[in-house]
Amino acid sequence: MKASDLFVRCLENEGVDYIFGIPGEENLDVMDSLIGSSIRFVTTRHEQGAAFMADVYGRLTGRAGVCLATLGPGATNLVTGFADANMDRAPIVGIAGQGSTTRMHKESHQVLDLVNLFDPISKYSIQIREPEIVPEIVRKAFKAAEAEKPGGSFIDFPENVAEMDAGDKLPLRVQSPRPPVPPRDKIEQAAKCLSEASYPLVMAGNGVVRAGANDALVAFAEKLNIPVATTFMAKGSMPFSHDLSLGTVGLQARDYIACGFDRADVIVCVGYDMIEYHPHLWNAENRAKIVHVDMSPAEVDEHYVLECGVIGDIREALLQIAEVAVPQAESRAASLRATIVDELNAHAEDDAFPLVPQRIILDLRKALEAEDIVVSDVGAHKMWMARMYQAERPNTCIISNGFASMGIGVPGAIAAKLAYPERTAVTVTGDAGFMMNSQEIETALRLGIAIVILVWNDSKYGLIKWHQDRRFGRETQIEFANPDFVRYAESFGARGYRVESAAELLPTLRQAIADDTVVLIDCPVDYSENMKLTEKLGQLVCPI
Image (cartoon, rainbow, N blue to C red; front, side):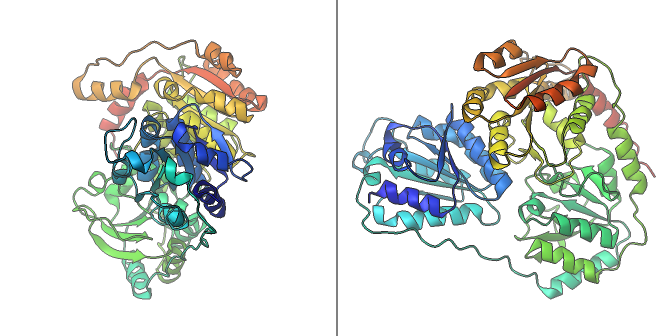
């Protein structure tokens, strides 16, 4: 058995279902060893698309998504999607072929020091130098990638090592530690802090979703009568329809949800990743007492000094604190929630064309079931989706927010459909982000999977225009020309629709879902709403 055969057996042992990537000269042995394997290789059209697919697959399943490239430019093309996964706490294992070890001591065609290239954006980065260490390296890579907080592992596999004899080595047994039970004294300390609070508030982060603690979060809020706001990446961990839900925080501007943070004397940060929404934005004056509930100790920050830290199993921590703490007599945020709900629904019948962002999001919500998955690309539309899309289940609105990379939308939707083939998968993408990885339409069609691509079309870098207008009152270098998106989709063999009035969007979305293939919807958007929102938030007066 050669090393590449052993390598593939180790991947099978880790439960890998898919490898996303592109064959190359230096990964020929690995590709050959995959013949007959239970692992399905998904040939993509760009390595960045492969990495984004692994990124979203890992985030949705909790198991490391795997991507493969050849050396040099193949490996560097993985970097953006790999870094996105690592910063968004999604488990991912990146693999790249490499030139033979016999030519690494000198200048050599396409050879880069990939281990050091990936080291700053990974939890574990290593080169396989001998065939007998393959089982240890693969096991360690997956253990590191999937351990809290999850992230990236990178394996550099030289071509001459891949073809060496590995003898009778076998994969190592997969083992995963159970999360520790939180200390009882910390449970009681947190409960005391909440019992004495006048206006407690919960901020639920991505760690709640990773820990599968969504039901415990709802039970905690209900038992103690405490309102919950979620970060972008925790949308749906508290159903928006719940009376104690305040929706999503993290716009980095004052909005109605910020009013709740202004009033709160105790903020319970559950599964909170600081990279999502920095505390200087919601605790600038250090007025609030912070209770940190997470699997990992808190990051050090001058605006995140803890009153109490409860480290351990998030689900168990929430249930135990709820058993001890004294509930609030009434929810102090009922009027605030009513204001938020009214604002989100204000444009439900807005017939303006091009469509306003609010109407697009409300119609999308109507077209989808609670379990369906929306993958938001990055751009102005992301800010609207994060703020307004009313998620009812965790991991049904995927937003890249740590690294926030454009181009994740189309490959992300493909990964979502592979992970959950019974659900509808939609990407909401701007015209700029769409064109960065639109070639993966062919991948989706070749795989025979159905996704809906909703393109918000304004022929601009809309988010940058928003920032330029806010800061300078003028704009520069943000316009571009688009192809005919409908004909572009049809050229791949997909279907395309163009929305020509506000009334057409909802039936077009429903038709696209029913078509059960790859469908692109070209939807003109009016981003003048961006500055209207900026002006509104600037004049915001918090409800009593």
